[in-house]
Length: 155
Image 1 (tube, one colour):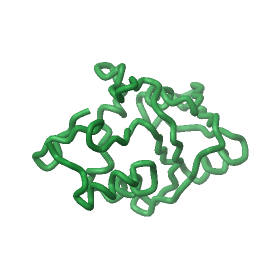
Image 2 (cartoon, one colour; image 1 turned 180 degrees about the vertical axis):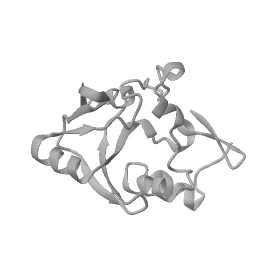
Image 3 (tube, helix red, strand yellow; image 1 turned 135 degrees about the vertical axis):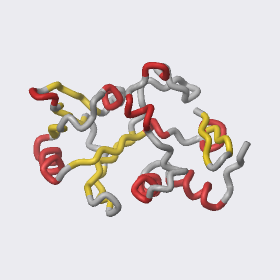
C-alpha cells in the first residue's frame, strides 16, 4: 500500500514493515464489555454497513441477527480491552492478521475491499489523537516511535 502524507510518498510494506491489517480495534460499550466477559460474545449494532472486514479475521465469528445487528463471538482469549480517553470509550484489541493479505502484505480483494478498509486511515501518520492512541497501544507502537524520531526513510 502506498500513501501520500504531507506531500511525501510512503510505502508501508517497505518502510514501516508493520501491517495495519494485522490487528482489530473495535469500539465497545460497557454492556458489550460485560457480555464478552460473561458469555464470550457481544451484539454489535449495525454501526458498520459492511461486516466483511471483521469476518476476514479468524478470531471473530459473526452471526446475523434481526434488524441488521450481528452477534460477534471472539474465538480467542488473547485480547485486551482498553479505555481510549480521546473518544471516551472502551476498545477491544485483538492481534489477528486479515486472511485477505497475501504473503507480500498486499490485499487479495483490494478492488472489492470492504468500505471500512477503503476509508481506514494510517494510525501511524494520523493527526487524530484517538488514532495515535491506537498506534501507541497496539502492535504499531514501534512504527509510531520510529516515525516520531525520524528513523523512517521517505521516498
